[in-house]
Length: 276
Image (cartoon, rainbow, N blue to C red; front, side, top):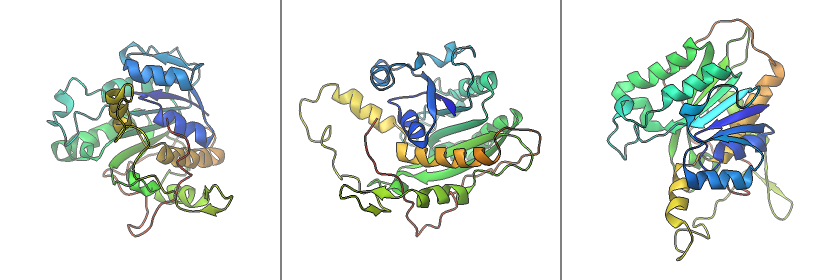
């Protein structure tokens, strides 16, 4: 499955979806430091700097579009100016979706997006995707769901072109992917839990790390690739059953939910492995 990564950052979406078995054919990113990281890890992928310059003929056939749309307009750490913020780039993301009309879309953002203007803004985003003939589901999935040592709630929006009798990417399907992929340990055994190091070997306590500010900022803005991989595997599983969209009705979930997993359970990922 060919995908384009919008607002690619240091490649969290690209890494996760490639782990799931997909192929990155395009990346859109404006930050020069992030572009250097992307060029190092994906040297043969077509890249565009500004999403406003995407015309619709750069990447060939695209089956999936993903992106972590800039979160500053919705973040509790900022002024939460929402649609009036110059960094509100959801209209550009949806413009690209309309240009390429992929079978699938995945978008990620801070959980604060769901409460802008008492939820009106979030509902309008889901409705706009529906107007583009997509079925839409939304989920709140925290980083700790893949055993990161912090919570970091994020809202994930998953959309598929309307099709008759299609199986939704619902919480149960995501849950199946979490529990069907065991973690491989160095001793060859498998466990269902991935233990992240509590302190990375670089950045936090190391002095003299080159580009330290850029690296910390980029990591802070990055999506969690392990979550992306699980979503990607769920999409591939659904796509194997319904390979091409047709006609059909749709309804979005409205308010996001927590991937259909009981709060007492721990979702289980692939190992953290290599970083972005």
